[in-house]
Image 1 (cartoon, one colour):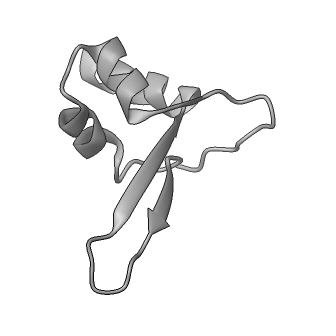
Image 2: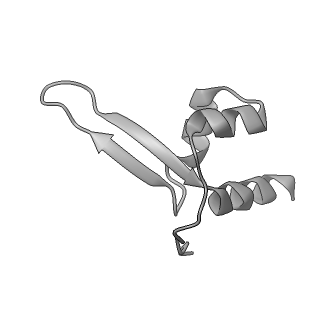
Length: 70
């Protein structure tokens, strides 16, 4: 399933998603990290852990929530 991004799309942060779902940020990160359409920005640092920033399109958020509501 491919998600087409538009220039008017609203992107949510992990914190935004966690607040909307009333869950921990780490739970939100696990739910959306491998979801198609989520933008993962990596900041690799030599010899250190990789920092990943997630941006979740509103459409992907709605799709995931609908899947859990069924």
